[in-house]
Amino acid sequence: MLTMIGFYLLSVLAVVAGLFLVLSRNLLHAVLALAVASMAVAGLMLTLSAEFLAFVLILVYIGAVVVIGVFAVMLTGHFDHPKLPTSNELKGLGAVTSLGLLFLLLGVVLIQPIAQARTVAELSVKQIGTLLLTKYVLPFELVSVLLLAALIGAIVIARGKED
Image (cartoon, rainbow, N blue to C red; front, side, top):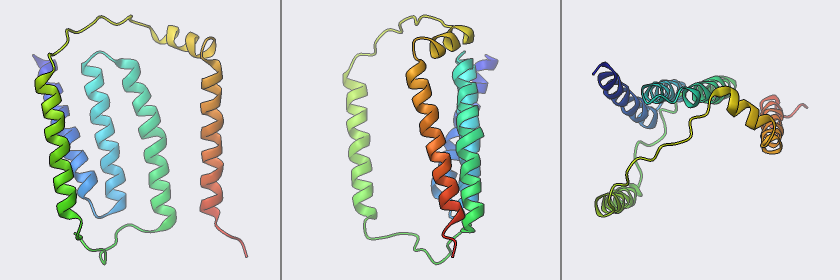
């Protein structure tokens, strides 16, 4: 019962933080809302017994993406833009597209029978680490090179042009 209450509270927190993220006009507040939403989703994963996935989400999104977002906002100094318009002429098209997608997804969910949950092979963190460093070592290293290139690119962009 306590797990269900935690699940629902974390769900509400994730939705509220996501809405704040999208609707915030201050970039720093939006990045911090992303951190709160990511923590709420990690908490949801913990309530669903997906500990490894929750901790990876915390490390990757909170530890990397949000920190880089905060650095980017701080380096550019663009905290908010009060002169930006709050709406534009494409608002109607966006609403029609969103409603169409909503009805399409609801149609698929309501028409298709709900499949029975399948049991998934439960892997421990040690087994996942062993797989990453043996069978999947090439993709693992390629991702590390990609992240290194992104980090170098971010440093070059942040430094700007030297005269």
